[in-house]
Length: 141
Length: 187
Image (cartoon, each protein chain N blue to C red):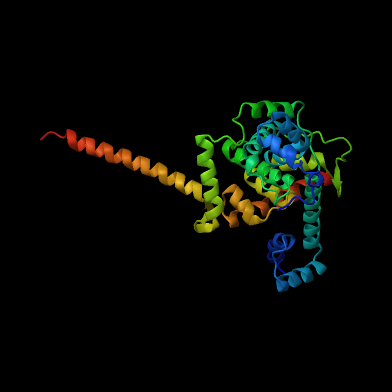
């Protein structure tokens, strides 16, 4: 039996992504292949250790809360409307309403990034158009 | 994802009066919130970034985002879940912005009473060293998936990478960690 066929499925198995038949096929292979069973056991141990580590709380450096509070004191008050915040809130609201735009290859992009790129491209086009118009105006007859 | 399996998820949420005071710009009230949740936010930042200097910067950024967005917090999600997401986003954004290798691995001090043994002969020191040796491209999605249990699609959105690429990175990250930790145990 070709173990590489099953090893490529062990990750999907631990992620719960295998269908019923694929799971049964893998489990059957694991019952008589000690190498693949060992690989699955080791992967489960590592994932278990990582989950345990995730529950471990690390101590921040001394004075951290004071430094954060000092930085917050320099900020405008949370509810205060500044231009940057209004623009961000509008873009965040658009993001929440419209979600993300799918791109080829499974990638997605936030709507606000698309708007940002669009505005940047428009600004560049306006500058190019101005430059071309100016060049035409200066051209000697 | 909700961090329901995590210790900090059991912390009581700040009261609405505390939140209202902080949202009105009362820095002392905000500092009380920071003191309560700093361990959670710092841990998330450390696990994503792998070194203390960057973790402190990213954790501070997460709290400042929290401060700015406090008026938008709605109690449909628990406060710890909301802040947990802000911490994750701030850390991943920081990593994408900085794109630098972690400093030589530092094993963090864990809060008093925590055991360094994580099970099956794996210690906190060996795990953090192995995570620190992973390239960032593998480390971040692997941490998000196997430490925090995020769905692959959410990791793809957070890291702005295609879903298939994220899965490959996690699979490779797991394989590297498994081989590294196996070698440590055999040594």
